[in-house]
Each structure stands twice: as C-alpha cells, then as structure tokens.
Length: 150
Image (cartoon, rainbow, N blue to C red; front, side, top):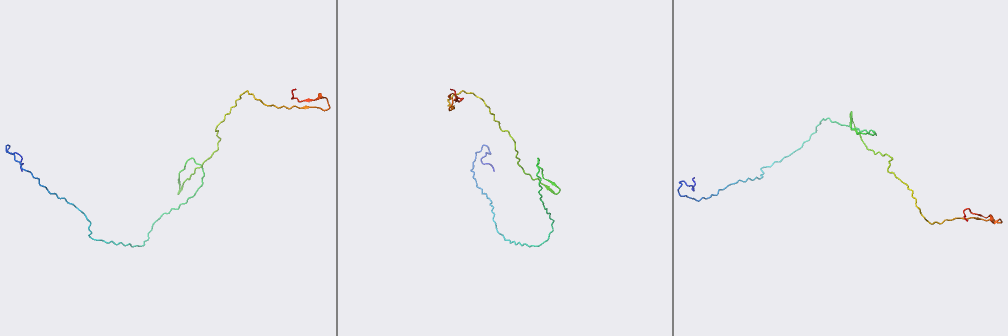
C-alpha cells in the first residue's frame, strides 16, 4: 500500500489522511490441576510362618588374661608384642622417687671487731676490815686485816 503522505509526482499537492488505531484482542491460557478420585483399592497383607533348619559355622574366641608381675625399672617404653597366639601388653606406672640430699643453702659470715671506749661511772665499793684482839695479853699484839690501809 502506498504511503499517502509521500509525493509521487513531485509537484503534486500533498494529501494527508487520518490514521486510526484498531485494538487487537490477545488471549491467554491458564492451566489448573485438581485431584479427582477415579477409584479405590484395598490391599490385604497376610504373613505366613514356617520353620526351617539352617546350618552355619560360627567362630568363638575364648580369651584368658594372665597377670605376670615384672616390677622392673625401664628407661624406654616397650610396645605391645605378639608371641605366638599370645599378645603381651606392658602395663606401666610412674613412681615418685624421693631422695635425701645435703644442700648448702647459705653461709653466715660473722665478723668481730674490738673497739675501745673510755667511760666514767661512779660505783660503790665495799671492803671488810677485821680486828683481832687478844684478851689478857699485850695490847701491841692486836692483829689488823691485811687489806686495811691505815
């Protein structure tokens, strides 16, 4: 269809027509689901029992534990070992060893210095005097104490 606004002759008068818009309808589909019961089923289960003898080989291990006192001082930790069908597992304990030692803790250094000091103090001294007199004798025979200074 030719454009009504275009000029075909070049010099011809321009003709304009009105343009109308026509609405177009659009359809969409929507889907819905619903549960419809179409039938029923009933299930019956029965259990039957019967006895049957079966054979099986079972292994049973009887274990014996024997405690062997060793009481030996070791420097290294021995590991568990197997001797034939017997496992030997070492059991340890730690013991505290207390030792008495003579330890010089400290020394005391005592120094004596002699110092002379002149002091003056009043003291009371006592002295005993003894006089012996003879009776019936010469008065010149009277003895005096040796400590008497008269």
